Length: 361
Length: 259
Ligand SMILES: Cc1ncc(C[n+]2csc(CCOP(=O)(O)OP(=O)(O)O)c2C)c(N)n1
Ligand code: SF4
Ligand SMILES: [Mg+2]
Image (cartoon, rainbow over all chains, first blue to last red; front, side, top):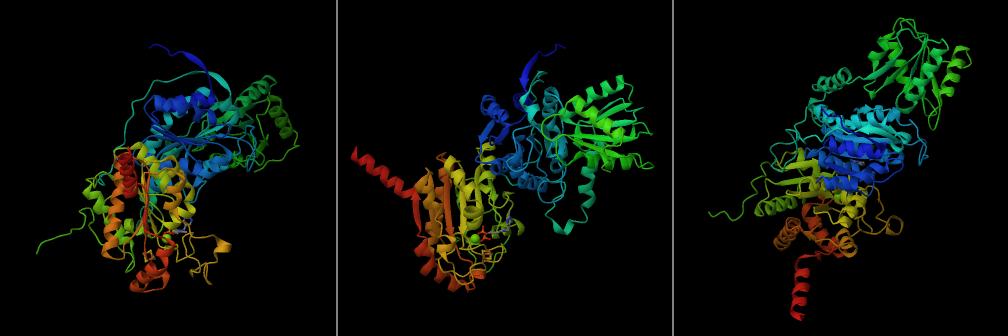
């Protein structure tokens, strides 16, 4: 097979192209830094491919347009960041009610409210839980390179239709803005599902579990749970670096994870037994990865670019579940905005060793 | 006996609106027009949140309906129509849904001239939640949140959606109708049909406000409510076409005559 050529692309632009090749037929969005290049690229690439692009009046309208298109069986896509993602939450909840698939990319910006234009991982807790009302989840990819971003988006539409769940690409400011060499996949043939509103009133949404049927609320509980359980069984993905003999295991996703790979290498050179778990998806969280670490591990260190520590909660739950006999301490390095340097991670590791910082859990 | 009027074939079960409610008549007229235009099996309705949800709950028909979030029907209808331009795409909303919480979505869809048809039932209040004040509530009208009568100086004045849209944007069609006697029913049907034709002919956005009664929350019998509508509501909300329709035809004919 002939290898496709690698080209230099900005994360957000590559994401747009990957979505098109993955079969996105419909996009609605509203500009917001640092996600805007995806929308700008799609504004001309979608019509070029005979697909729909709408610049909506805001993010509430965007997601509700996406839901309308998704209800017709279309592969629908939207992107945003910070305050724009906040506005979409109502729509996500409605999508969950109707089991509508769609793909949304959150190019996270750091901060609260209007936030800042700096990179960050501030939306982890909301995006791995339910941001809108009710019990639901997204399947959440957390790429650490432009190539992985492309691969994730390319796959996302299939996965979202397979489970009839929203898929969220948890990107971050710097990943969207940086350029890397990528190989673009070929165009997928667009397949329509066997359900969807087609005007006849005869096909419909064919929901697995219509939640508005109150009479069946309890009866259908196992159906609703099994779908999420299935996702948890089938979609855990991670990368492990030298965890089998590690005394301390770093846990990081996205760009901080790349820094942690270098931190592990540097510390190993100095004789410190340190490893890394990098979740490639953060929902479902890769519990299984924790099953395979050194059973005598002395601590987990979550490395995150936010202020209060978010993923550390999942790390603690994973440690409890996979190493139930041992109360392994779980630490959290909260770097705040941007991306940490290798020396920041190394310094934090040393302060764990000499007891200067306390475990969170 | 000769049958002169039959219910639209898609409607299979009775509705469960309150006695005297205008919703049933409006919806029937819409489906009559859809049927006459040959779109019964090529239609999707984006449903608002309000008493209109009873259409879905009572399983009155099997028409493809999409339950939108409260106020977002024009946005979801936009997504549906852009994906399926071959289908007849309508919204069916209350005045609160379309003109209060959804005012943004409604005006923005009209602004873009989306090729959708918006039906909004104006019953002067939030019916479903028990009769609170809406932007359409008349001056002095008592509701659950204006117990001494609406004070417009403090809460704003009745909103006129079709007039706003006709005056500010370039919709294909904008009108208001009611259904309190045979004459107005005939007029309503004509307006509804024109609003649907505007979409079918690719002319663009159309909105029809359906001025209705809500005996339950007005605290009146259906007969009293109809009287109230004629005496009070019609003064604030005149029936007629504000964009497209007969006026546009006349203007066109006048222009042609001058040439
Ligand atoms: C976001 C949100 N806020 C509030 C509600 C509660 N709610 C349901 S219907 C409604 C008002 C509906 O009024 P209108 O659109 O005029 O419809 P009507 O019932 O009068 O026909 C409200 C406030 C809701 N469902 N969603
Ligand atoms: S509350 Fe009013 S609008 Fe709602 S069904 Fe009853 S009469 Fe009709
Ligand atoms: Mg109302």
